[in-house]
Image 1 (cartoon, rainbow, N blue to C red):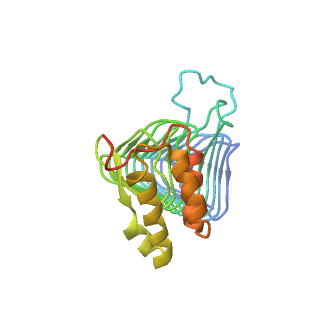
Image 2 (cartoon, rainbow, N blue to C red):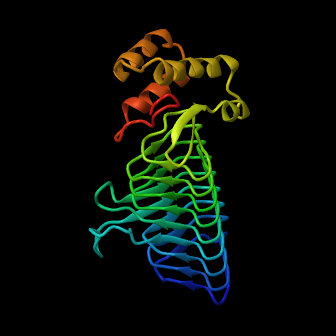
Image 3 (cartoon, rainbow, N blue to C red):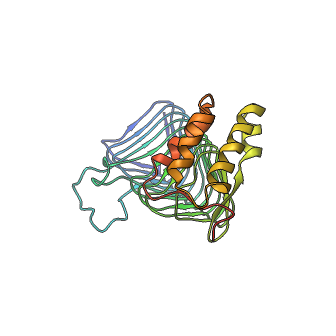
Length: 265
């Protein structure tokens, strides 16, 4: 264990012997830090927070702070869990959860959170996610695996961002983005499927074609009829496509409705 002399580590904190805590970092009570994790100078980590292995948390990040929720009171259960192999850059802020939703904010593994990213209370992030500089999540947001959020993207509370999606710089997301889609714009809309991202991650040509057909049915051919009817059509015609079934599940599980498409006014 390497803890530089000017670092402050609370007596209840559990720091693995292979972790590194640099100068002037502050590790609060009920914080756990796993093997190989590096906490740079002037970082503040409050608890209860559990951080896994081989993360790198850069200077001036604020991790595990109280939820920014006016109903939160000291003494309520409130936790943050961060997985392994994450890069959390300078000035990121990640808040713990509230009792409104399992008292937990969770970050998965292999994510890159660039400078000034904000993750609010009760958010749930999967794995292999990139959030570019100044992207911000309101409370209770879900970000699924392999999503990419461009710089200054804003996500409204309770929204879901699906697997392998891409949100362009400055997008304002106030509805769900289904799996495999691309969204952009201040009044953001679904523009297309994320063909580039799917190719980069090794999806087959047939899988990409199936998602293209699903996009067409939901966003181009569904005007004037119920969305449920379009989804039932896809469940029959694309029953052999795992990706389309994920796309449908993403839409059916929406709590706030899905983002509108390119033809919608």
